[in-house]
Image 1 (cartoon, helix red, strand yellow):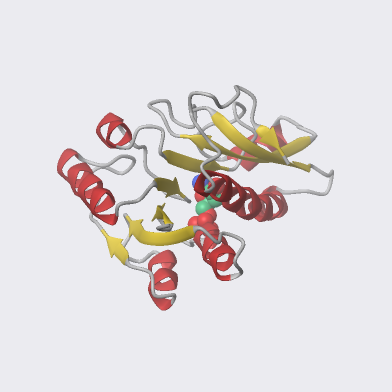
Image 2: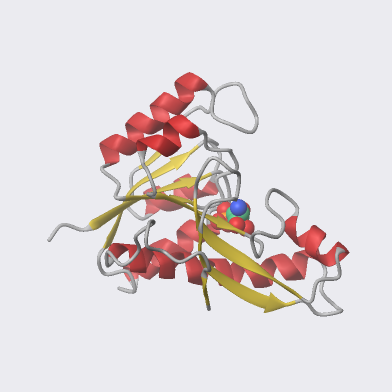
Amino acid sequence: MGKFKIAVLVSGRGSNLDAIIKAVRDKKLPLVQIALVLSDNPAAKAIETARKNGIKALYISPGKFKTKLEGEAESSYIEALRKSKADLIVLAGFMRIIKPPLIQSFPNRIINIHPSLLPKYPGLHTHQRALEAHDLEAGCTVHFVNEITDGGKRIMQAKVPILETDNEETLARKVLEKEHIILSKVIQIFSEGKINYASFPDEPIVV
Ligand code: GRF
């Protein structure tokens, strides 16, 4: 049987990509092949990491907008993703809003990792917002990507307690550790063919 191919979209550091690469290497994702890493930032460390690990990595210019992909750029992204034959597209620290043409080209096959317990704190500065609200816990969510930013059906969440001594940096670190765990877990379940959008419950799996 052929491998379950994933394409990973990144913008920067790429620690989530690192975790996926490690999980593949350690045979925790035995069915998975990373077919492509795609970046909107030519300086992303993730590109270097991918290439060092023998994974095809491309920078595609995102066009003139800061927060989304401009029409022509979006078409190039769609084309590259189609070419990669990815069964699943993973947004792992991809800092742009994905719009309908791309979403509809891969229906229910795009997931994102977000550093909050969605539906709380979609968007940016999630840790700061959780601290300011004096929340007792924070966490991360892997969810399907739809037209609403960070609003698609949630698949898996992990929680961490917020301690009195926590600041943005310590909280981000704790949450990131969990991100690395749940993103690979979700990819694993997808690769086993066990996640179907339509039949997936409204409540996420909490680990
Ligand atoms: C992660 O916290 C992710 O949830 C957010 O951006 C960060 C990316 O980190 N969307 P990395 O590039 O995977 O290290």
